Image 1 (cartoon, helix red, strand yellow):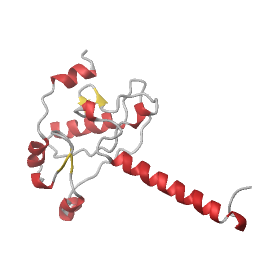
Image 2 (cartoon, rainbow, N blue to C red):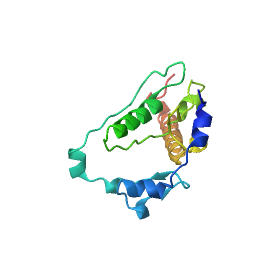
Image 3 (cartoon, rainbow, N blue to C red):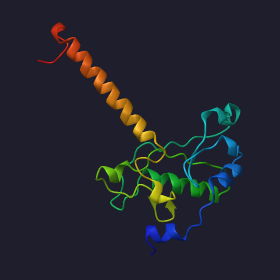
Length: 158
């Protein structure tokens, strides 16, 4: 059996513009993160299409010892739906936290259910993780300052 990296290296990636055209997303609306990754603005959501569509949300899963988790399940599900002729799109957000915290998994799925380019899947995937970290640090600093400023009112722990 081929390894994940062997399978990934055999794949020819399509430019993100080609993928966008396939699903009728205007190319000039893409926010590019290289040749193969982009964000799509929420303003392009067509509420009428949403009402006539189904959403499958994979929010939590205990990964197997082989590292099969949310990404592998999500990509495998999309491949299966495509195979039976169903239109679908997979939206993944920061799929790399498991390995970063020392948990099992390769963050990009596995086998023939991978997201590519896997070398781009890291904590700074699209810059969102930095924004979340900055917001967390700001809230922590504000709370720390509030506790300090109101310590005489009994707010701080003693």
